[in-house]
Length: 468
Image (cartoon, rainbow, N blue to C red; front, side):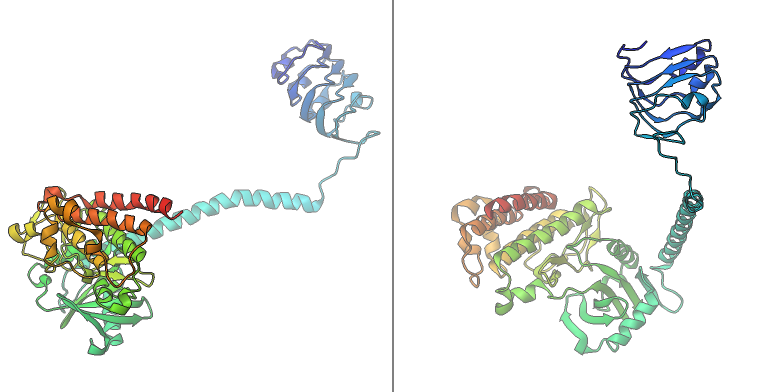
């Protein structure tokens, strides 16, 4: 069967031809290993597998082939020890670079040293132990997670209920320790630590070793928890679970005796309203920073409306409730009067929000929906570009028929900043029109915050082309 261009491997079934005396498969295209089943050919005398592409070791089983006399395995790619069989003493084995043994023309095979044997044993031990150890680590980690979840569940169960001593805490931290640390750090709410007065309480800057710099809002005694404690507790629990780069992180709520307060992360540059009202600081807010702030607020509201479950309505979006960090990144704050809404529903409640930002339909109907936030966002976006609240001019903008014919971009620009270049001018025109669309007279005429957020995101690609 020589010179037939046979390809692929030698079939292992060849071992069933037990009466075969001569096997000549030379000058073919055979590849793969020499099958150990050849050792079943007990009466084989002549074996010729030369001039193929066979690889791997010559099977040690051929050492038992006592009748074998002539062997030719030359010009293959075989390697490893030459079998201890008398036929291989005179065998034709040239052309195989990897064969070794105690024959003329071949390198002796290296015997594994004691060190390599020990090393191999160590490797075997590691291969055995590592999966076991890995399994144990995963098991302990799983038990630890279950323990932490159970502990957190118990803490959450206890949170929101006043103890016999009048203590109430809603926090992922140790509420009592946090309460004591805050009171000690600012000397029982000394006025020197107060940085801002709000509609629902005073804001204090606090430095704690455990949290660093934080903001603490001490609530007025008349705050909502006195009349709707369960609603407030549920709201705070939900807010502490919100994690978004454009929403101020809330650490929790503490209440005991004379003091009730919310604990937030600290925004270094303070409120947007304080910066816009300061002529020196407002000039640091160039046009692109202002565009980025508008986008940040939009992304936060879209997240609250669309991605939180149940969704949130903030109800008090204003420049006072937008804080800026050291990089002028916008962070929406003050969820003190926010309400959790069930999907596809609306709440009837007392009028809430800041004068000048409240949607007209909310003032008339007292009906709270996500569209109330959309209106407030439109007012805020125009204020950021103008540098101040537009006041009575908003009523003109609510009439969409006048929007394109009588409104010029120059009417909306902050006079303290240089007039924008053409490329920035296009971005501001785009945002202006989007903000005005949020001032629709009816809720149905306003876009959703998800739509606004998507438009502002797509604006990034457009801006990239403009500034190339």
